Every structure is written in C-alpha cells, then in structure tokens.
Length: 337
Image 1 (cartoon, helix red, strand yellow):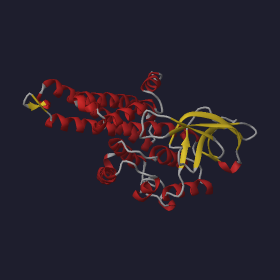
Image 2 (cartoon, helix red, strand yellow):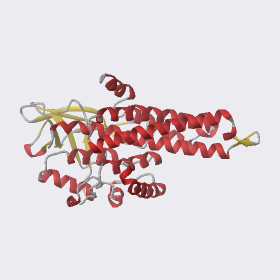
Image 3 (cartoon, helix red, strand yellow):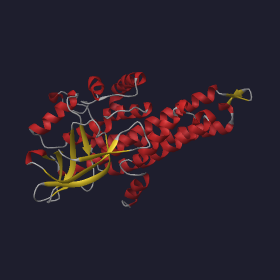
Image 4 (cartoon, one colour):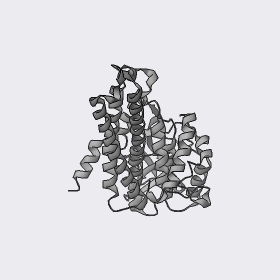
C-alpha cells in the first residue's frame, strides 16, 4: 500500500489476480506455493520478510474476487500475533511451519479468554474465522496479572457457525477450564502491542471490503456501457451517471482511509487506533452501499443467481459486522474528543 513499494505491490496484485481468476477457492497448499503465507515471516524462518502492507494487497485482491480462503484467520492474524511474541523455539517453529504450509494455525480472538491461577484456560468466542481445517489454535488470553498472552491450546470445543456469507467458514470456540502447560503460553515482546491483533483484523477486513467494492464498481460501469435501453446505453442516462459517480466517490474515500490505516499499522504510529477505526467504519459500511447500488443498476439480472452480485452483498454484510461494527468504531473515535 505504501508508495515506496508501489511497483512491488502492483506485481503482487497482478500475480494474485491471475491466480484468483483461475480459481476462487484457494486452499492452504496453494497459498503456500504462492508465497502468501510467509509474506511477513522473517527470511531466516523461510519467509519473505515483508510487512503488513504486502499482506493487505492480498486481502484486497481476495475481496475483489470474493475468494474462499483461510488467509485472514490462519495467516494474517496468526503471523501478526507470532511476530509480536518473544523469540522462542516454539514461536519460531510455528512461524516456519506456517510459512512453509506445513501447519495451519487459526487465531482465536475473544475478550473473555483468561488463564486462572491454576493454569487453566476458560473463555468463549462466538465467531472465529478459519478454524475449520486448522491444525492448531492460537488463543489470545489474559493472565491473572492482567498481562496479555497467546496460548497454543488443545482440547477446545469447536462448533461450526452458519454464516450468510458462503465464502467464509467460522466456528464458536469454547474453553472450559482446560489445563495449559507453561511451554504453551507465549508472551509478547512488547506488552503494549497486544492490541495490534484487533487492529490488523479490522484493517484486513476493510481491505477485503475495499476490493469487493472496487469489483462491483467496475462491473457496474461495464454493464452500464453495454446494456441498451430505448436505443442507447443505460450509462448515458443522468440517474445512472449520478449513481456510478456516488459509487466512485465512496470507493475513492475508502481507498484513502485504508491506505492511511495500513501505513499507520506498518509504522506503528501514535494514531493507529484512530486510523483503523476510520478505515473500518467507513469502508465496510460503504461497501454494503456500493454493492447495493450495483444490484439496483444491474436491474432484474442483478437479482439472479448467475450474476454473482449476491455473493458480494453477503460478503460485504458480514465484513461490516466482523471485528467491530461501524457504530462501535465510531463510538471509539468519539471517545477521543
């Protein structure tokens, strides 16, 4: 996303678009072969040594294609958390295994997970992405001291959750007093960066929404140029022009906000939380509106299964609620003033 690596991002975007054009269902081994899983993993551990900015490019292309993949929950979140933990054999092994595609690790983010004084993990999360197919679960929890830790947990109860968006898989995860070994508890190198997982999740979803909004804008403009009504393209009618212009303004605004949020995360700036909330609240709400306009401007064909617009509408709707609704993020922003 950052301008310093614009050429690299263009190449990464082009390769991702080519891969997704062949198949919208991208499994774990395919992502490993493409190098996506190790983008943010250090080179000495088998990764590319890149940053979240490069992962954000992939997130945007996945949204543009409405692809079905465990990239968000099992790669973006997991690698981000592991990179912020103290260096250890367990942590380095997990990173290397994820980068090589040997192990799929899903990250469980839930406010209620905690480890008691006896070393037992308890808590519940209603909707955890990409748990299905994961070899291990990395649970973010709180110790009795109040410190935030990551736990490589086993024996959790996983219950699939039906979603309106059929391109994603989610489950409810429950820990009911599970014994946790000391070696399974991984601590942050910088405790203040524990909140970064939530920020990354929100921005990754915003990137996804930006991509799908761009796809719907492009599809609508193309349709308006070719669909004839009363002997002329419907794009020549003023009402259609205005609607497309509104879509363009929303996508352009979202692009700027997402760009700023990614830059803030990569640079760990002082206003990261504000940038994240602005990007998440505006982009995910705007994406639903853009897809709705696309549905309307496609007319009757837009409501058919063959058009595929319903796939984007369902995905945009789920994105709006994941990792904080627009209302929740706006409330967070208002508390700053």
